Length: 246
Image (cartoon, rainbow, N blue to C red; front, side):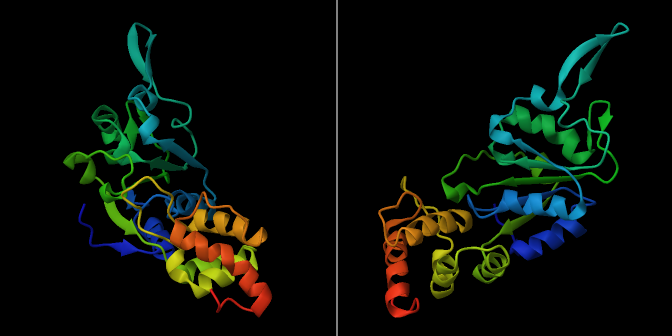
């Protein structure tokens, strides 16, 4: 999908706050770039619970509910996770991985904020997210009717913002120093072959393992070109007093 609105993590929070209150927002982005975490942070900042539905694992009845007979009439009972009485943030993750039948079940929820006779409480916010076709992830084409019901943005990784977050959240100093010296290793484009690649959360985990083990053979979470440098970073810091040797 060709998008003209590209945002970093901080800009996305502004979009969700200013646009999400009046129209559902769809977040496009590579796997592991932080889409889910940002939506959770957004909900927390508003003091609202965040209910996540994983599109790739849904069937239509998981959204519209199942019918019951009441007073001679059939009534669809939506799932308890959706049919809440207080406002909340409804996060439709992997929305573009849904089957066409599940996408159709989302039409009224996204466009009219209702499922059958149930309406979302006033103040509720609907956010969708999904990977891009070029990411080699599970994706399906979204119908034009569904696409046209949302405001679309593409999320990109920002080393500067990640470093600000890392400094405020007690990330290991070696990891912070490594990304400072090699910001291009914070995120890598998903490869065409079946191999791991660097993402903001994955990079931190893999590097922490490597750096704490002082170059041990922990390589499952990084591509080879990043892992080799990460493995040697801790000894270089200890031996030379900085990360310039990496």
